[in-house]
Length: 485
Image (cartoon, rainbow, N blue to C red; front, side, top):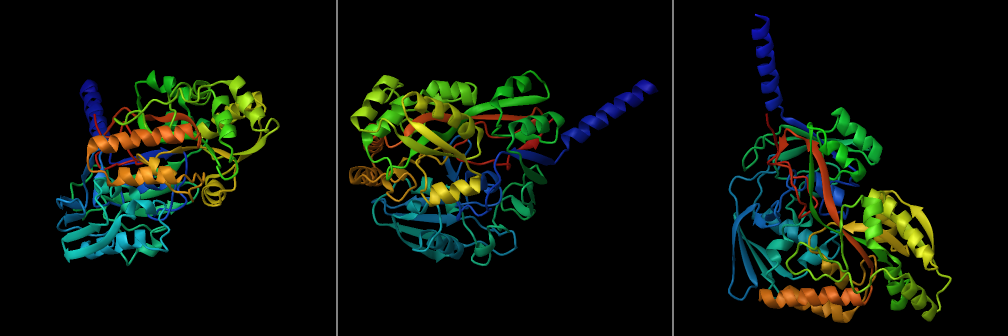
């Protein structure tokens, strides 16, 4: 009798575990707002991309471009007219229908003169967006752009409703499988399953994103079971402990995150000084010291897993003697620069190492630790910095170097023309060659000191499946996540 009761209890426990439908996700940074069309912070997309908001197209977990709110599309022979066919029966979370007029509104808003979209350049080639009928949208381009499907997959291009667009920052209303429930600022964002979702219902009924910036607190929360998964775990030095514990799975993949020592080119105008900074840096020492060996050295702003990648780490290898000579040649032997560091551990830990390496060649740094909102306001928007360390996690974003008003203020008309040609190239081989040339140009100009490609190091409860291994965009897509056992 006792044995039978014990077996029954064990079966009930297993069944209960298999039926779990909630999840707690850990994140290092809290988003400044929840509108991906009105903010540059990666943390926004980490909460809402593919969960709350959707675009005409979307990134799959392998980086492929997949149908989103558009179930299919046609492209004219000359490549300038794209016709998107929208899914039937799509509604926003407030119950209103999503149709072609919402697409016209969303793309018009994103590319408007007064747009606050952080990636407004994605929409620059669009001449008109028209609603052919409620389920059909025609986008006409000024020149062919085979990359439009890619551009429209970004979080910055999601479709929003005119009725709720102005309040999406604090009360987001999208079309995704989860709807916004609550935001306790400084602590968590809560989502619940949207029962009228147009697609397959997710297995999860609710999700909470908890913000834990301290690596020690993140470790404790995972070990205590307060967090079920931490897709971008901030304490890589503890991953071996999780790997040895059968309760957990360690997930190591790649990201789109080019981690750079960004240089304000409007302040450090002499390319010899920028080259000296690049040669002062020992990439592997930073990877080992700040990331505990997780990361791939890079020599330009391009992901090593991309087929068009060129290994340019040899263009500015670690060479303190050459760095000192360049500084002397430029008359900058007693240089002092401000180094502004945002909260992520790769920046704070990496910043200490970079400051030491720069000091070794005669560059003193005034280090300032900034909270994320401060960094966005002062560095990204205000351009009030000399040096900073940040990971650019947007997919294939080398085109930011063609924007003179971008925060590191690189203004090279030759590069801008090169990227314009790459944007309009329809031949894959031609486009590949142009992208490789672009990588070489910014490496030779030493626009920034390129450090490493950020690895995606995550920890999760071993019973979870469906979490992304890699990060083709900054997202925690929960649509396929489920508990097993």
